[in-house]
Length: 161
Ligand code: FES
Ligand code: FES
Image (cartoon, rainbow, N blue to C red; front, side, top):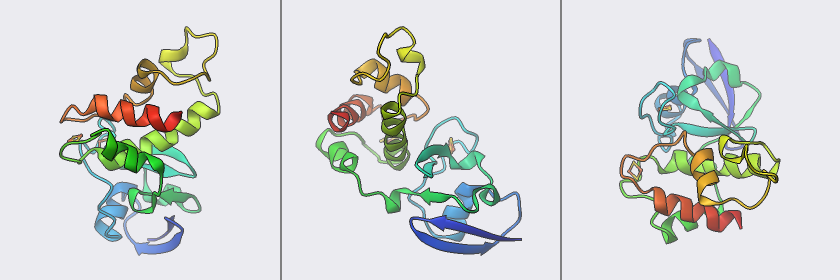
């Protein structure tokens, strides 16, 4: 079937089976290989992209479901988080980094809107300043096998301020 997508501000059309995941559409059909495939089953966050600013696991999304939505991949990101990750050594091999950055952008927007998280249930002011615990909880869907978590948290904390 013909699938129309809007990726990083450009219209894209591909001829693909209806069961094609958004992740495979990006990587295999559109040459956007910045978005990574880790587990391909929603467990690692390496495939995180933004759909109308909301973070999603693209391995769990059917491409056809995202017709008419604005998809942003790491190739379309221009955000202070990118330099902050470099400054704080927020990566080693870099495989998880595109997903971490897309997820952090979505997470900061969620936090700004006052969306609660498990780490904030006990807080009187869940929209208050992000501390390490809350960043870790809100980013818990993004795994880093290199263990660069301290740098990731530091980079996000700096940008959140
Ligand atoms: Fe999508 Fe792991 S590849 S969550
Ligand atoms: Fe290697 Fe995160 S930097 S998996």
